[in-house]
Length: 88
Image (cartoon, rainbow, N blue to C red; front, side, top):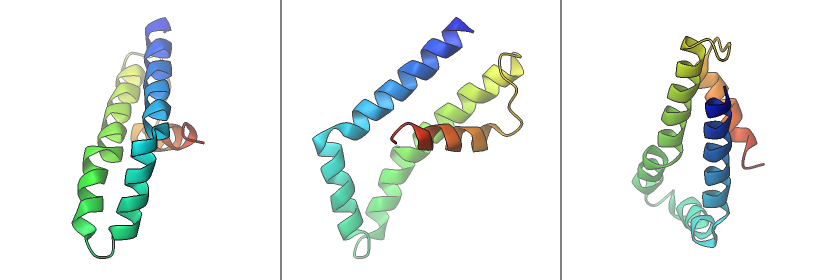
Protein backbone atom coordinates (compact mmCIF):
# COMPACT_ATOMS: atom_id res chain seq x y z
CA UNK A 1 0.00 0.00 0.00
CA UNK A 2 2.82 2.52 0.63
CA UNK A 3 4.00 1.99 -2.96
CA UNK A 4 0.47 2.64 -4.31
CA UNK A 5 0.17 5.76 -2.16
CA UNK A 6 3.55 7.00 -3.41
CA UNK A 7 2.62 6.32 -7.05
CA UNK A 8 -0.72 8.14 -6.74
CA UNK A 9 0.91 11.16 -5.08
CA UNK A 10 3.65 11.20 -7.72
CA UNK A 11 1.14 10.92 -10.57
CA UNK A 12 -1.04 13.72 -9.19
CA UNK A 13 1.91 15.99 -8.43
CA UNK A 14 3.35 15.53 -11.91
CA UNK A 15 -0.04 16.17 -13.50
CA UNK A 16 -0.68 19.37 -11.56
CA UNK A 17 2.85 20.62 -12.23
CA UNK A 18 2.46 19.91 -15.95
CA UNK A 19 -0.93 21.56 -16.21
CA UNK A 20 0.36 24.63 -14.32
CA UNK A 21 3.23 25.34 -16.70
CA UNK A 22 2.66 28.58 -18.63
CA UNK A 23 3.36 26.91 -21.98
CA UNK A 24 0.76 24.23 -21.34
CA UNK A 25 -1.82 26.81 -20.28
CA UNK A 26 -1.07 28.80 -23.43
CA UNK A 27 -1.31 25.69 -25.58
CA UNK A 28 -4.71 24.90 -24.09
CA UNK A 29 -5.94 28.38 -24.93
CA UNK A 30 -4.57 28.12 -28.46
CA UNK A 31 -6.20 24.72 -29.03
CA UNK A 32 -9.49 26.05 -27.74
CA UNK A 33 -9.37 29.08 -30.01
CA UNK A 34 -8.37 27.04 -33.09
CA UNK A 35 -10.53 23.97 -32.51
CA UNK A 36 -13.28 25.07 -34.90
CA UNK A 37 -10.89 25.60 -37.80
CA UNK A 38 -8.62 22.65 -36.96
CA UNK A 39 -10.58 20.00 -35.01
CA UNK A 40 -7.83 17.43 -35.59
CA UNK A 41 -5.40 19.41 -33.43
CA UNK A 42 -7.52 19.09 -30.34
CA UNK A 43 -8.15 15.40 -31.03
CA UNK A 44 -4.41 14.69 -31.34
CA UNK A 45 -3.67 16.66 -28.19
CA UNK A 46 -6.38 14.79 -26.30
CA UNK A 47 -5.20 11.35 -27.42
CA UNK A 48 -1.60 12.11 -26.51
CA UNK A 49 -2.29 13.92 -23.25
CA UNK A 50 -5.53 13.53 -21.30
CA UNK A 51 -6.48 10.21 -22.88
CA UNK A 52 -3.02 8.79 -22.21
CA UNK A 53 -3.14 9.91 -18.57
CA UNK A 54 -6.58 8.32 -18.24
CA UNK A 55 -5.34 4.99 -19.64
CA UNK A 56 -2.38 4.97 -17.24
CA UNK A 57 -4.50 5.86 -14.22
CA UNK A 58 -7.14 3.27 -15.14
CA UNK A 59 -4.44 0.59 -15.37
CA UNK A 60 -2.92 1.62 -12.04
CA UNK A 61 -6.29 1.53 -10.27
CA UNK A 62 -7.27 -1.78 -11.91
CA UNK A 63 -3.99 -3.39 -10.78
CA UNK A 64 -4.53 -2.08 -7.25
CA UNK A 65 -8.04 -3.56 -7.29
CA UNK A 66 -6.77 -6.90 -8.63
CA UNK A 67 -4.18 -7.07 -5.84
CA UNK A 68 -6.80 -6.32 -3.21
CA UNK A 69 -5.31 -2.95 -2.29
CA UNK A 70 -8.42 -1.00 -3.32
CA UNK A 71 -12.01 -1.91 -3.99
CA UNK A 72 -12.96 -0.25 -7.26
CA UNK A 73 -15.96 -1.48 -9.24
CA UNK A 74 -15.28 0.72 -12.27
CA UNK A 75 -11.60 1.66 -12.72
CA UNK A 76 -12.21 3.92 -15.78
CA UNK A 77 -14.84 5.90 -13.86
CA UNK A 78 -12.60 6.10 -10.79
CA UNK A 79 -9.74 7.33 -13.00
CA UNK A 80 -12.06 10.00 -14.47
CA UNK A 81 -13.06 11.17 -11.04
CA UNK A 82 -9.54 11.22 -9.63
CA UNK A 83 -8.01 12.94 -12.65
CA UNK A 84 -10.69 15.62 -12.61
CA UNK A 85 -10.03 16.43 -8.93
CA UNK A 86 -6.28 17.07 -9.20
CA UNK A 87 -6.32 20.18 -11.41
CA UNK A 88 -8.92 21.77 -9.16
